[in-house]
Image 1 (tube, rainbow, N blue to C red):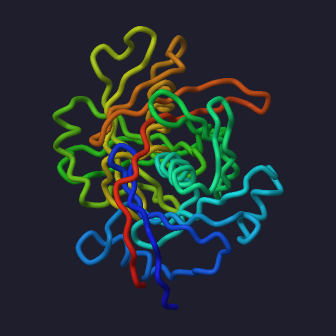
Image 2: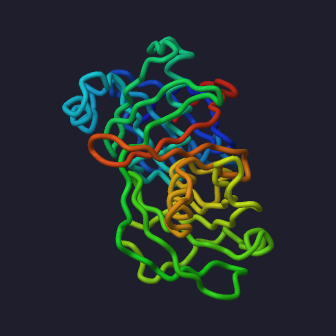
Length: 292
């Protein structure tokens, strides 16, 4: 199909997105069209494309409304290659900012904005760093695939973690190893997950814990997008993995340094189990019109 899209470019710690509003769910772009928009040489450029649709006008959105009838808006997120993604932690903060700045919703300080995603409804609030999103429950997926990456001499064990989407976290020994990894190549996992996975490479900062807050540094190769300057769900997975490895007494609050900045991760108890939240900035950069 052909369509004229009024878009906004936004980012959260350098993880950048092309956003557009389609309240009635009338603009159905193909994977090829989405990939063309996200292309950094011939399109607008971004790590993903986000369509804002009223939940009632999208099948996945109707499922979100069944979970929480306050989820008026659905974040229809696709990776840069056009593939569908379940969730995006940086994207949902930028999505909230987009809705607010365009007058599509309101969010008073202290209130919560419910957003529909393919991994369920996620709650977003304002905070000092920008926005905080409750990413819901998490789980170890029971896998420990061997991970190989270009310029890392030795394969490493990874830890499989699900945070609405699949992740494999790998601990490295030093900043030099982290800097040497060439993530323009897709890391190889053995066994390879059926649906692929985002892969995070992590080193602890020194000291690991300061003023009761854990501190790590991370790089990531995102499924369907390649290396990105930041990955929200990846930062969450990396903090969870590091706490798991650190054992009893490890903190429930973490800062994660990514190439694009710093985000905060917090684990907290709820009635349905432990949840984890992600906080950080969300910026809108420019607007334009695109024929696709």
